[in-house]
Image 1 (cartoon, helix red, strand yellow):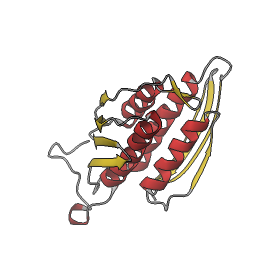
Image 2: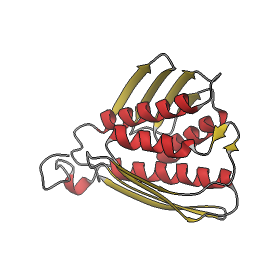
Image 3: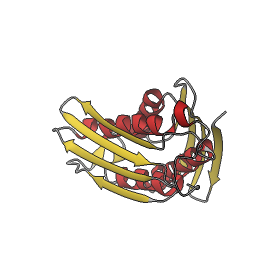
Image 4: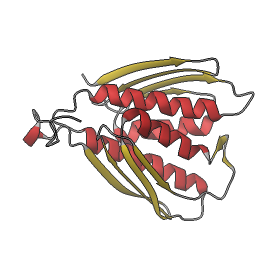
Length: 196
């Protein structure tokens, strides 16, 4: 089973994430940031990951620590769950329409970190999530999962909710594609280096 359970407890946040990469899309999300709950729910559904996220944080300050730390723990869980990476497809790319938005996410479980976000938002917040934290959330995932992660809005559309939702759905589908087992190479590591 390609599963992971990670906990992170600091003076600012308490985060628990469980994930099964080979699940059916069962989700249980409980964070103090409602819009992020919605996005994580989409991630589980469209990735077909069984995922549970429990988070508490210093929301009396703002949502930054909580959102970033969820990204850290989710990245750690992805890295642990993918295991030795033998047989995975390694790369995932999705171009996904969300109404008038067209979101591109391309990633590589390379064992190295790189992150690029090419997306602009017009509102300070969508629901209770600051749009500037989209960068911090996905950067934390990329660092901790040791991903090359590129996110780009090919068409920005007019609505920040749709922009963010398109990104999360495309991310889910790209991760799902990358961690799938390649039946032609199921016992091989997808690297000429012999290590990822």
